[in-house]
Image (cartoon, rainbow, N blue to C red):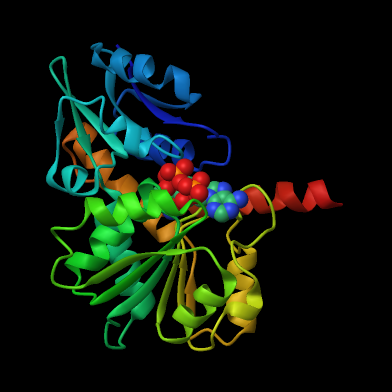
Length: 291
Ligand code: NDP
């Protein structure tokens, strides 16, 4: 029987996961199919329940469902429990296990972005959804001493900070209101800026005006499609020390998920190559749309 893995999210059409994961299954001769499953919120629980069937190896979960999905699994891995967010589901018999492979993927991305420099100790995170939770958990465990979370709806950022109260007790983790003057002031005293909002995914917009960006920032935008968001362009123009999109994070979270579903190490070079092809073909389509 051909096994199934589904990406549960809304929207999912922008995702490169299907090309990347299908190439990995095919390269290892695993009889499995990766499908995009656009799932509006009211259908989430039923969709996750259906994963208990034998035909499923598991699933990925993406925007906007990572936190809610954590409440529908039977058991959570350490990173899923620590973040309260699930981006990967595996099956043990009829039981569903929730994982969070975004955490390590974010850590690897930030390490790569920082390169040979000393790892900074202060960061600003924009957003308070599932992706932001992975970033904040990684920053806390990487030894950051000050992390400020801005979110359009402040109460969600406050909920995030409450969630991490214990693990962040030794450092300063704060939610602040989304006011441009406050963001600008925080950015002037920080080194790392993480965009964990979805702004820039569907349109050429940045979550914050370019004028707020201090020079010398290290900017990690989790969005990978489009590959260069307005935020990253603005950051370069403002003199950023380095910028990175979410492609490495996508690759790393996907490789870890592949290993969890199949028990085999992911063919990461195949996946990297397929991602590059998907990016090139998507850029060609966008150019066509603009022409
Ligand atoms: P969620 O839906 O859980 O969270 C979305 C976040 O974006 C919230 O903080 C929300 O704020 C904010 N937001 C949405 N619209 C606006 C707006 N118009 N202005 C300001 N803020 C806004 O999504 P996720 O956390 O799962 O994902 C967030 C982003 O990270 C997505 O673009 C996703 O593709 C990307 N991502 C990339 C990964 C990778 O591997 N590269 C891995 C994980 C995520 P509010 O709460 O106020 O609505």
